[in-house]
Length: 115
Length: 113
Image (tube, rainbow over all chains, first blue to last red; front, side, top):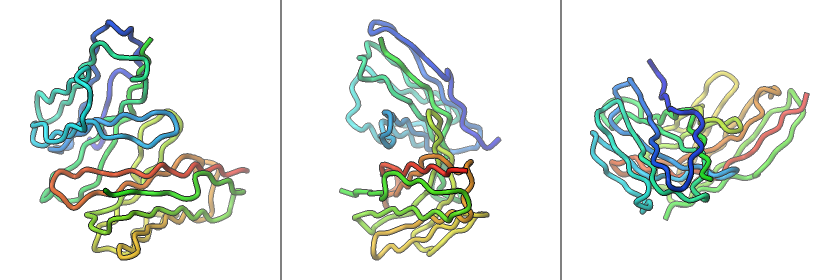
């Protein structure tokens, strides 16, 4: 299995809702990432997990809450979002140095719309 | 702070022509550089990864070069096809253990039949 999967593909939520995005990989990668991408812009890093521990938080607002319950799964919990949070949310994974190549693999993304 | 620039921002070529896409970065202390393709509204597909010790990588019609000292990488796509129409992004990985990548803004490519 050489892919990163993300669910749901599309999500529409109100500003008072609580929802979660899910990302899964079975490549044995021990680094997992959340990115946010606005239209016609490059991906912006949000969080990095290394060995299931949060290693980088790029000053993301607390209405975004990441979780890594095991080495294959990465969640992003959403609460009280704003319309400007509407974007494509991308998950990626990568082998830790020492496990071979350091190529980054991306999932197809979740298109989030906040009303 | 590492800055990554891709020029041109958009490119249109007739089918069969070779594509040349440029990526420049300001800090040469990189671990590797990765080229991606992104179709509209989709995720990123990895095309080529070049380690900092390498000068080039090839895969089929794709060839990517890296000149770390001058802070440049070039992606060549030979004999372009309409299916090559997409946005191409380069990402530079810092020389640290957490693997933080810095992306360029991308080059939007249209190949006309």
